Image 1 (cartoon, rainbow, N blue to C red):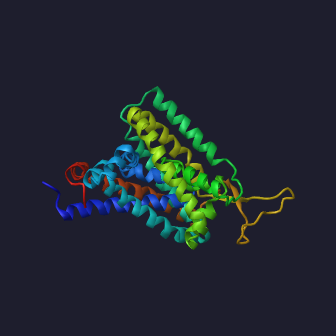
Image 2 (cartoon, rainbow, N blue to C red; image 1 turned 90 degrees about the horizontal axis):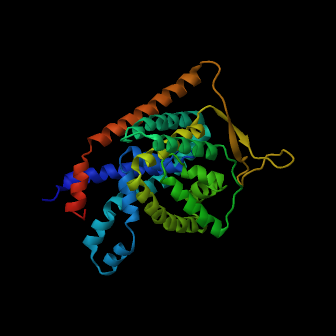
Image 3 (cartoon, rainbow, N blue to C red; image 1 turned 60 degrees about the horizontal axis):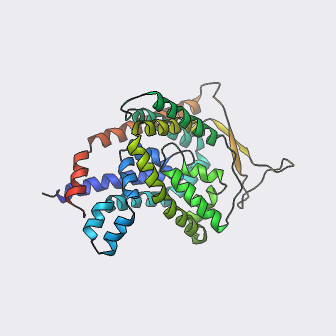
Length: 330
């Protein structure tokens, strides 16, 4: 017996909302869409769906076996979550551009609390701690810290470099703790790809980035799915380390360090604004309204993760499995 339509709508609406969260996270430097996927319980299913696009799925498609193709690839789940992510990216690119300009401390505080809390829930999914899990956790933390302290390259609009940005960006976007947007910053093309081209629909930039994403996402998902299946606890340990190390990027109290030339003169963007190279982080030496507000926002971020986890835990996994096996269409 198939699931009732209202129940399916409720489940797909939940998946769509998770896609919105993943997309929003991918717009923000320092926040990983993979982290949101992991803490909302769709990470493994997303990876399996992406890696199912192989020769077998192509055979089903070319033979016009659409029901079998939909069931094999979990296509309706993938369309729903990617629709949410894409809509969110185009929506939040404008919103976060405004928020980062006018309320940077508040935005960073919220996401610091968000990611800090997510570590607890990700760690809970490790079924057994052992030597290799600890080693992977340490390595993941070290890699994320190293990436966080790297200096960015300069902007580059070369067609093939944009394809590479698409590959690196989309791969890092699905790894919890590694921010796809921050990888684009390191490659020098965050503003070009995520802000300028998205807001102005510059297809000369978006098309090669999309080509890279289309190539990189299925290819990497095969590897990640295999590793996750064979070494689940070790993989989660590594990903948890990534998340912990990424907290350096999200520390709310920091002053920007601008990119300069050999004469110490600030290098400007095409908009006339200076390019941020890195940040000098500090801890406030006195308590004031600004500090208390930021701290309250950090707690709000922690609460948001708790709420997301609470909602996710109430979603019946058996319903999702039933929907996938019994009904391949919406």
